[in-house]
Structure formats: structure tokens, C-alpha cells
Image (tube, rainbow over all chains, first blue to last red; front, side, top):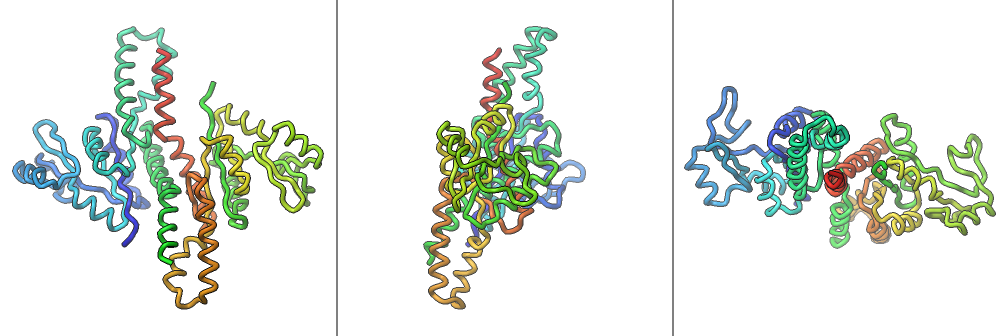
Length: 204
Length: 204
């Protein structure tokens, strides 16, 4: 049996650009991990293909998947369900391939409970890294703006707590490079490599 | 005060090619970390420059450095001392720059005690990764060879225990890429980033 693949979960605040980063990663020919296609009950948009962009299902079909435990995570947005089929994820990991999910923060929390050993990456809005500058130049902004900015920052930092890594989305290409570096590094983690070799020694 | 740099320690079994990997890393223009030059009592070889290849010191000078706690780690090989000056390391880290050490396993153990938060990378001989093949094709080798191979493998795996990451030196360029990816990933670790932002919030 091959060594299990890594489950890579990319998430972050809504509007941070998760989809753009994911598309860029999978447009690169050297990307060595598999994208887990989501299931949704929303109607396909022009050009969207079932089994490529999404698995398009009816509300009844989706709710049956929920009842039968076929979803690793799911959530409802604007009257439509979105979810991650668990069979594809488990099967691909068992084949020794890394699987990449791009999901909402709420879904990431559900996945963490089921796959605590997954690799959780928080995509950080660049505005958060500008926080320092904003504080420094605070004389130029009203107290209300500063107060709201700090509230949002606090919420975003609290969201991070679930994650192993934080990647700033200052430039899409840079964010992709960092995500790929994280995956390479994780494959070199001592616990992972050592376990594999210790098993080989036992065989002897 | 800038955020502290990372202390990167590359080590591994003797003969694994640590020096070759280190030279390749520092020949690359995009390498963003500083190399900590070692002190030695051995005589300079043709072409070696004091303060570039090594700091060349007399035995008396070296022993004075030991007595005054000026060395982060040191060891004696073939009647010569080799060591890492602690002042350079601390100062460069305080400037917010990452420092790279390439040292023997014994020295790495000393550094781990003083800098437990350092990034310890074990350079693995490719022979260890061939272990599996050797076991599979074991019919073709004598029992003695297999036994010795397993003993060495066991020793090398035990050495790993101190380290955070294991990088296989199958190809120098690949090993360098993995080491650089590890440094990028470590800079994205949530604990590191989060601490920085939480500090900013406290300022407010």
C-alpha cells in the first residue's frame, strides 16, 4: 500500500481570493496535487461542466448525500448547498496522492475535526499586513475607521487559530509559490519520513 | 526592533554532502539567508581566505573563545577545532535576518540545547531511501551486507530524531530546493505570523 497523500485545505475570509489562487495553482504544469471538485445544488453557469467545475446535483440528491455521510463538509449559501464528496478525498489520499480543497472557513472547521492531520492553510488578506502602516499613520484616519479596522483584524486573526500556516495574498503568484513550498516542506517533516523508515526496519 | 530571523541548521551523517549543498545554496542569487562562517584552528588551504571560508585562529585563541563562552558549538576533528561564533549568530538574528549553519551532528545537538526554536534539517544519504529496494531485492545480496546496511540505516534514523525536517540528498539541486521551501514554509507558520499580529493589536 502506498504512503497516504496529504490533505491540503486552503481557506480564509470571504473575498480574500481563494478561488483565484486555486485556479493559478492548477494552471501550473508542475502542480503535483489533485483538486477535489465540490458538489453544489446551484445551476451551472455558461461554460461550466459537470464533473469539471462542480458536480451539479439536485437539492434532493444533495440532502441524500448528507444523510448517508457522503460529505466531508458542507454549507448552505444563498439557498444553495456546497460540499466536498468524502469518497473522492479518501480514495485519492489512499492512492498516495495529495488532495487540495479550497473551501470556506466554516467547512475547514468541519474538515479539521475529521482530518486533524491535514495541512490547513489560511489565506490572509493583504489588508491585514497593512495593519501596521495604518496604525502608524493613524492621525490621518478617523477614529471610527481605525476602530472598525481593528475589529475586522481581530476577527481575522481569531480565524487563523485553526490553521497550520498563514499565507498572505499580496500577489497571486507569490501566494501560490508559498503554498507549494509549504507542501514540499511538509513532505520533508521528520515525523513523516522517520515513520516510513522505521516501518521498513520492522519489515526486516 | 525587527522580528528575529530564523536559525537554520543543516547537518547529517559525515560524507552525506552537507558542504556541497551549502555551497550550491549560497551560489544562488535568490538565497535570502546569511551564512555563518566557522572558526577553525586548521591551517588555510590554498585559496582559502580568512573571514570568507573560515575564521582562522590559533589553538590558544580558540580555547580562549571556549572559555569565554564565545562559541555556540564546537568540536575537535583530527587535532583541529571547528566552531560557530555565537556573537555573529545572535547579532544577525536580532537584525531580523535568517542565519544558516552547516555543522556536524554533534554540533547540531549543542545548538539545539541553546536554540530549541531553531530550524533543524537533517540531510539524508540517498542510500537510506534505497533501503526499500535493497530489502525487496534482498535475494541478490549476502546476509552480511543486508545486516550491515540495516545497522547503518538504524543509526542514521536514530540521528534524525533531533531534527524538524529530513531532506534527501539524491540530487544537490533538488536538496537545495527542498531546503529553501522549508525556510519559506517556516516563515508562514501560523504561530509565527499570529504572534506578530497579536502584538500589533496590543499596541492599539
